[in-house]
Length: 100
Image (tube, rainbow, N blue to C red; front, side):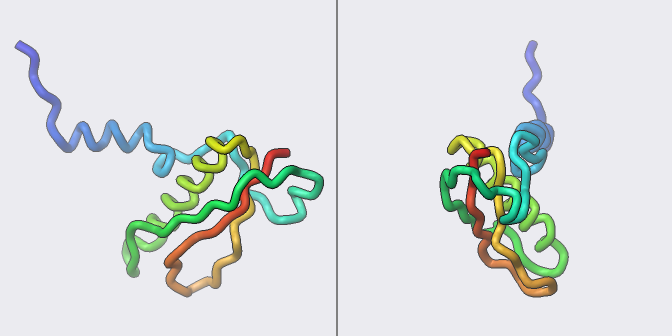
C-alpha cells in the first residue's frame, strides 16, 4: 500500500526547487558599471510577500531571487537592482535585466 507524503514534507520539497529559495546561479547581481556594452533585456519588479521586523529580510531575499529567475527566463545573465535605503521598509524591488 502506497503511503501519502505529509503536507509539510511536500511543502519542504517544493521549496527546494523554488528559485526564490535556492537562488539562480546563472544570473549575477551586478552594479550598473558591469553592464556597459550589454543588451537591456527587460525591466523587472516584484513586491516582497512578507514584511515586518522578523520576516522582511527573507521577503526581500526571496523577491530578489524571483527577479533573477524572471531575468533568466527572459534571456538575461546579469541584473542591476535599483538601490534601496538601509533601514527603510522595502515595498517593491525594481531591477533591469541584461544579457552580456
